[in-house]
Amino acid sequence: MNVLLVTTDQQKATTIGAYGDPLGATPALDRLAAAGTRFTQCRTQNPFCQPARATILTGTYPSTHGVIRNGIDLPLEAAGAPGSGLRPCRPVPSSAGSSAGSRSS
Image (cartoon, rainbow, N blue to C red; front, side, top):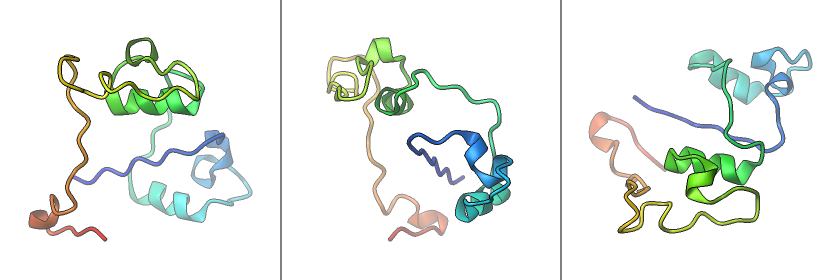
């Protein structure tokens, strides 16, 4: 299974053609939505982008990982540093999918 998570700043769903924008100014996103899964009942843990993305990366609430507003970096211990009790966030090597027939650039 391939997962592509697309995040944007200051954009609500009603500005995307696949979600009903009559201007249809997002053809690339519309094609991705048509070929994949589109979520219609999503919520964020924080209205600011940096805390919301830290929540996606860690799986914890902003009050737990410490990024409660923009301009606060994710603490190392929240990212899974030794002794934090959290799983580390590890990048996937570019060759990880090669055995499954996928490739990276």
